[in-house]
Length: 328
Ligand code: NAD
Ligand code: LMR
Image (cartoon, rainbow, N blue to C red):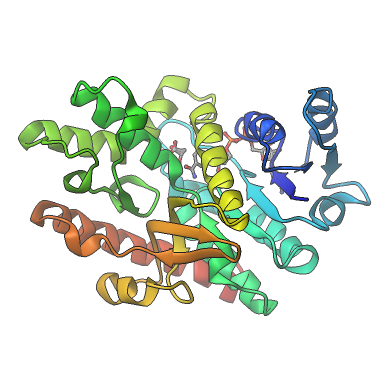
């Protein structure tokens, strides 16, 4: 029996993501946690004729976080504020860092073995925050903590199919590594399957669109938030990959992970020189069982992109670590 929790379930991502999880054969029970409206969303979803109960929990209620998290196998976290035009993801740190810290404190206490999937931005920093909180409670397992970067992969496949006139974006796979913001997002177009040949200005524009795809949505929504529906889809794909792996089925996806403690991770860490990096991950019953080092296969142009990404990540990671070590 798999219990899935969505923390931030009443939000723009939380609601459609909860709907998709309610439809998933890999989820037997759903707990929806938020500071507002989670019982309403739960009541709504509970009328859907798929098996498994759905229960809503409010932060202010007695059961609250403890009730939602107890017995959880997987916790997906899209809690926190989204960007408005003109903001960077890092501008969200001030508010979202504390929100993520609080939810992770709960996980450390009530569901220390759960798989933790962090969507809340800035992912490059919120994942290190989560790791530091879990370390403080002696329950950190790098194999079970993931920053969700699947939307970058989804965008890369879609946009690459577009410029290559490939009809079905699902038939294209572009590995995307690094982090989840602007130039820390590195699509490795040279390793696309099937092989595509995109060069010069077309390639530069495509890389830029993948790196800044989030801005496209923020601008189009014009103050009403950032990507929610495509993110719910991406978050669902990632959650199902983790749950498939947990059941012993073959599953891989890119994820932003702490490289220590995952097979193949230390080799990647030697190359990138940072603790956290998004790389292709294979899932198994314990979570991330293998991190694939595809970085050495990247071409010269992509090696330059990787350098810029690593520089950006260094600051983002230390900001998250410092937040827990020296609370503001
Ligand atoms: P939203 O404002 O629509 O929803 C956020 C939800 O979080 C709200 O329901 C809010 O009540 C809830 N919340 C706030 N504080 C909480 C707390 N302490 N505990 C529990 N719930 C709390 O925002 P959204 O559009 O759903 O985006 C959520 C987050 O996801 C943002 O930080 C956004 O930047 C991020 N995001 C990440 C990706 C990614 O690829 N990783 C993609 C899109 C958005
Ligand atoms: C995205 O990539 O769409 C998200 O990180 C949300 C954002 O702020 O762009």
